[in-house]
Length: 615
Image (cartoon, rainbow, N blue to C red; front, side):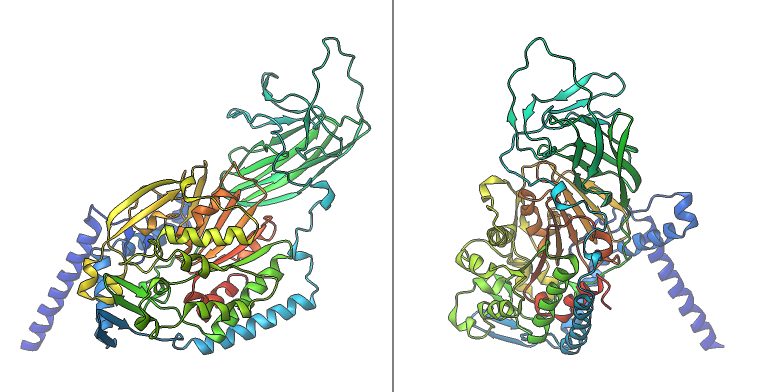
């Protein structure tokens, strides 16, 4: 009887404790929005709707919200990490230098690399045996000659005028100039003087100003138009992204003919005149609509526009997924440093993965590998250098494994030459945005672009007392005293950024360096499954896909200097098939952006392969 009473009292006490914690968790008002340990935005309270209630997504999102914002969540995660340190990390202390968990390979990675190599080799053989089928290119693409060559010095083909009430625009052939009219009133609301060019270069933008017309003009001749050709018959976009569509008109007039453009649903996609010719299409919301190019009421050609919803996994990645940081950290002076390592099988699988993407997406897509050195690159102490792997040697070995068709960017030399600058945080495992800039500069030069200077960006200090992730990985008391600043170099061009979070919500920004956060999450709003940045000022048919770990977050903003659309995917948090989503998008570049540890691990390569259906 006495034991039963004790059991009942214990059960009631446990129930009261768990009930109190649950109640406090539900009623807490000041919920966190960012996890400093995991370097990501936390889930938000889902909006209620009958649709989300009936399909079950509302309660799934609600469960994620409460688990993500649980009372003292970061502290509980930190305690779990501290328990890990009690398992016995080996500290070798001397000369103000503490080496933590050195290794030149990831434990258990060899088997994963071997399995991944079998998968990617089989996938490559399948592609080659299929002769790179038409799936690598849009089946309905117009012949190459219908798309004019892009020029950088052509004059604008018209003034873009916002017409919020009516999305229709009217664009004539280059001999007539481009005009935009209001279909409700018939009044001209924007346009240019008549340029002079050949009729077949309807959208080329290579024009010269025409002479002024005399006051008396002869009646316009009757023009017979026999066909209109569009450069694309289908567009597959995601919210926030854009594309450009060109038209070629066949007529019996050497001066071409006037055509008009319209969009069937401006709530799904908007259109505007591209300064270099063609029509810019910008995805607004999920759905389908039709872009129509017409000549009067006689001829019409259409392009179906589909704006796709991004489906993501509902995941709560723990700190253990953050770039393998339990391997190769050391404390030196007033900073924590990370070592690089080389794995022959891991690096070879990573190289084969890049080659598979190249062959899958087609020869016209440039594939670049941008590998970030880790912080030990800046340590000049010879005694320490003898104890840690030489990253220059690692990069040389990695480059030797790359296929000739892959652009392996020499990031190491650029960063080593500038190692006296503030390239890495002292208290965080990431590089600073200044460090990421030098990687961007090496990348831009490697593909023939002129990199912008740091002075070309708006500079500000977001946080002058930043304490990053390293304490949660070392639990060394000295790390609490390591203080950093977060420098931000913000692009000056107008842009929009749309992110899809882990719970499938979309958030829109007018910047790629968010003001609401003063940690490393300030760069592109942290690690998210899918992010798209649109820069209207840049060519809308210059599109880059960035496949990255968290080092890529500080790198991406610099790409806004060159690309019209920047798509960022973090495969740790995504579940969609990248190839199925983007095969018809018109990618010009794919960039693998990882730190040197991730680029030598089978785990990352296998995630990239799974993301395009190689399982």
